[in-house]
Length: 419
Image 1 (cartoon, rainbow, N blue to C red):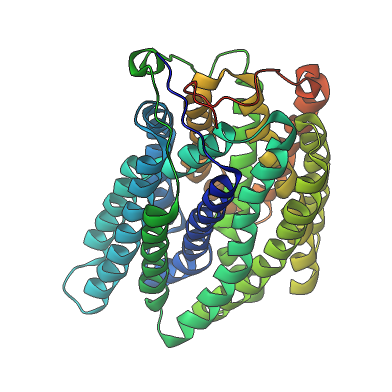
Image 2 (cartoon, helix red, strand yellow):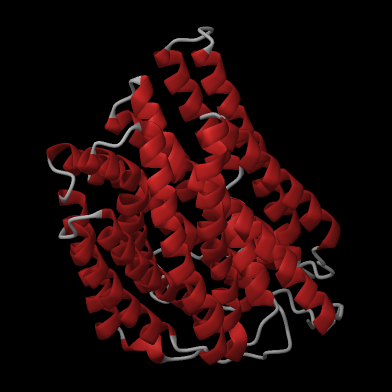
């Protein structure tokens, strides 16, 4: 029998605010692995492919475990899964800083360092991959269809803010030492996890655990297959852009490790500003359909990548990636809103987990695609990204379901509780 537990508007508002901080922590930490790790690791002697593998095994954990943690959050609640992910993220990030220090001090060799980095990131991928899917499900539990695109965009804007603050912090912290960012970002994530532990309200728990636990949603379910495919294409393109940007600038302009990290940070700041403006001031005000967001976002991404490839200096590249940030700002909320509206309330965590898994899959395959193409020519991976964005555009135009809304009772959450 269902039990109604009322969550007040002020409690929901507080919940979204602290959840915003959690998404900010994850996004800020990703700056570390975009701007700092690739040029530094290559300077130590790791190859482009080996650097890609450090990302990939972690992404493999995300791919396999995100659906599990999403379903688990349907069963035990969102907050515990969010906290697990954030605390694991904090610990593993700080641990990587210590591993680099052990190598620099001569206690371990390059091969041992490589193995430790892979294991540490994999530990995060397998145990800490539930934060994002549980957070999106938390939002879906507590929003109506009409407001969902806007609130999803608000959560996405946390990544945009982190894309502004993170690179700025990284570019300054690395001046104090190449390992300082690991300890800084790991500590920030730990503090935010504590704040979420204290302030994130979660009164509701599944009232019929056995029924919730029986959810067997898969990536091939026709209700979400379109979004899963686009999620994979988008993430593969993001992996190309984000994982290769520092090394791309390093090769194109003959930057040192410090210079490559510094200028990558500056490029990411501009991209973050563009993303934040779109998600915070535009999408959340108009709540457009998923189809509209995905079509326009695909077009922006295609044009931006073309401009990036043919840019001749850092300023043009920065503005090109700002346009790419606009594309991503549109497509992310489109995907998560579409998936949320396409499934039942008891499937929200599972659906979000599957979509996060599809995102992770793009990062898993990037060492076999983007990284290999980069070794042939730095421009080739970005041409692959253009092709993938074109496929997204075709799907977004052809699939008419993207303009439909699934109707259900707006005053009940996934577990049958009033929210």
